[in-house]
Length: 336
Image (cartoon, rainbow, N blue to C red; front, side, top):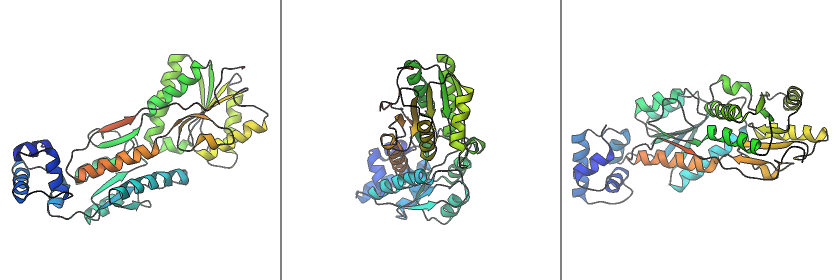
């Protein structure tokens, strides 16, 4: 496959000069521009953005493919949307939100009408139809998440497997041997949500390696479901000394109320930990130690990766952000 580096070498210029010629963001001499155009034609350099930008036909609009699901948490969804918009604005780009279409129809529509220069996709599935679509359209694209078969595309995410391992490792190091886990609704797995699968894989691997007994409850969004999930864990794990959240904020708040109503103290009676938290765990009714979700960083990397492709720079592949533990005092040794 011909790359921008090959074009630069053939034209006798730097990669950045080729990028400037493609984006039009800096002026270059007409002679240099003609050499780059000649190299692109002779090498059959194919990114779809190249021809559009050499013709000055960019729109300065990115599409954000962000389908809304009934079981999703809209405030978290909108935090992603806002972070994408904020980063795009820093690069003088507007964002066209594709929220009501299925995963592919909105992208196909805006690409066919040349409304956008590229696309950022969120809500990524393990097997995501948007992978083959953007690849077939040769559309600059970046995924907030890691779809299967998308290793050649720009993808950024938290290392969810590593987060699952870090969460269990943190509790194991504190002496916990029976851990209850409250996860996302069952529908997340039913629709093939990739980050949940990867977190669960890391969680189970670490639990097996460290000899930790875990039990997972996945409450729906129905009233009282979160409280019932906690009671289910307490019944199934009578020696449970730690509770691990991998779920949205309303479920966390409901379970913390249930723990308080039962007269339990955190962390004296029960250690509590929030994994991959998109919310501020310091301002919950009980501040929780956590692995934060680097939402702003993920969105910034995705937008900039898409815009680099618009400029003719090749997709960087998969970038996983290492999980980081924040200690807020909600994890202690059992029986402290």
